Image (cartoon, rainbow, N blue to C red):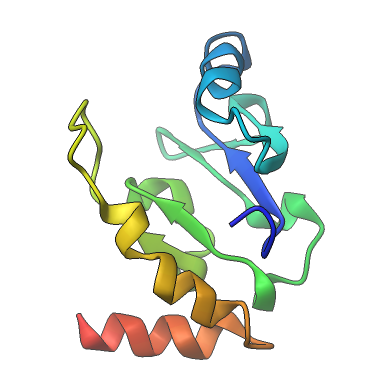
Length: 120
């Protein structure tokens, strides 16, 4: 995915905890940058990932997250996923690869994401 997209790790975790874990998980260097809790906005008791901080055209940005509170400011950019708890057989992200490949060929992700949400 890192070859097709500009992948950014954006987590509500503190950098002192998440950065070392990210080093282990991202052994191929797919993430071009990392944003931590310090880059989130504290809003109504939750840490929200404000995608406008990326400085990118939001028509070309998606957020993949298990917490709807994290994308409160940009729900139309969201690809919701289930929470992951040490299930080594989990394949949700792998199953999404064809969908991500489809997004690579569009100028505006909103239409594709809206269509995907309508499918359920």
